[in-house]
Length: 201
Image 1: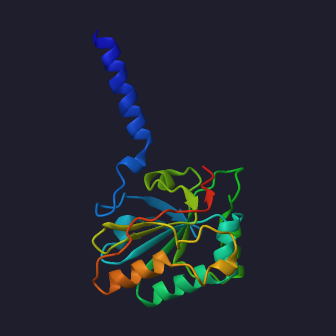
Image 2: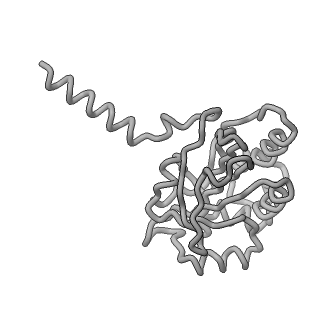
Image 3: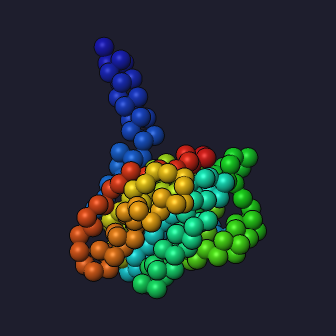
């Protein structure tokens, strides 16, 4: 009698443990992480206490990522964020042999060639950081406030298209959220639908 119940409990716990999004909530502490960038520097969430932090999941081979970089939209928002004192980390969670996986040198060349402006590019080939944040798409965007609280997660904008011509008419969710946060206002849309290619774990 107890064995079937015990089995159900174990299955339930396993499902919950495998679904980190069940525990990921805006308004709660952001998941801790530790990752190494393309220059071998270790980055931890605790390093950015007191600063606003943007996490951008990226894959240069994804057409939705190319949309924002080819149009200069991602770079413009990176530069705007830096001007506001916001730290921007790009994260690549593509596993070896999967689309978007790069070496540190290849990642740095992409940053140079696209004139991108993240503070660092973190390589996450084992997907540990991506899974901690339930990152589903590239791009998938997160904002963590100076207290370490997750205050935004979702899409960069509201137009789930791979066409760069659609950017000007889109609501730029990330940009608006950063502006509202800087002004001390509640973020009007703190959870939005991410779109793009699946993260290649």
